[in-house]
Length: 305
Image 1 (cartoon, rainbow, N blue to C red):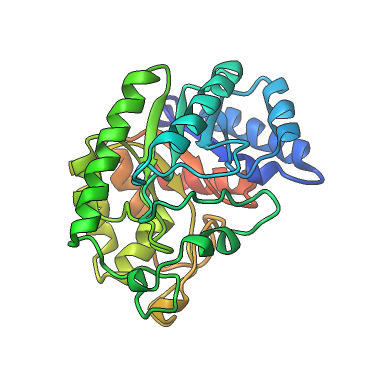
Image 2 (image 1 turned 90 degrees about the vertical axis):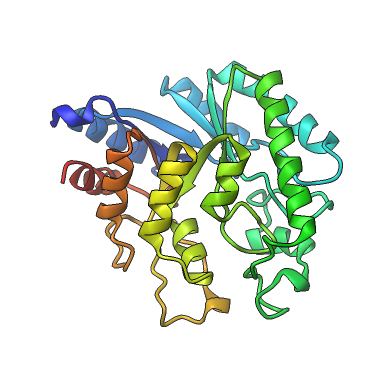
């Protein structure tokens, strides 16, 4: 055990414990965190079902949330009407208070006014998000991957709207720390660059593989952009996972990460983790879809290097 570990909050995404053997995997992760001296927790993923929420709550583990939970729609603070998102947030806060959740992360910036279907409840990400696809926001009019629309008047209008609504929910629900996440750059998801996240003046969850994709798509340096997020934005949480994608894959064909930390990659995740550590960040969520205790060991090696 390292003395450097004792102030680190390390959570596993609930998807790691989904399905047969989930409770055994959960106990393995909890035991390894205890051995290594990390403060263990679980982040309830937005695709989670009520039964899994109940068993994790009964396990007595500290929980955070990837909102919204148990919702038919996602949160979109950029929509012209705030009514649907406000209702979802109100319902989630009631659930959070029951579960003792005090910190939530969410995607909240889509370039649409159409209600965004929540995926993971029998429908895939692509199935749901294709309902809000806009070809003019695509890199080639067909791919789900975004072009750079951040200089458009529509984007600026929506950016100001997101900032305003973030301020509203922080004021109305101060019991919860609300972290808006940098987006995977697809289907008009729009919280992409450090300068835009900084403008929001809101707690941020920085996702490693989302940023890796964004930087490749828009020809930015991954580690330089990481440093800008850490210096210019209010980063309070990290979603850590690996991406297998490299420049050999056409930009239109890239996908998300959510792979184990030891997956061969070109990201230099140890450098990413050290940058976060040196910036004073001590809240990490291993958002590895099929994560195991081996990812906790891998994180410990990066953190203590």
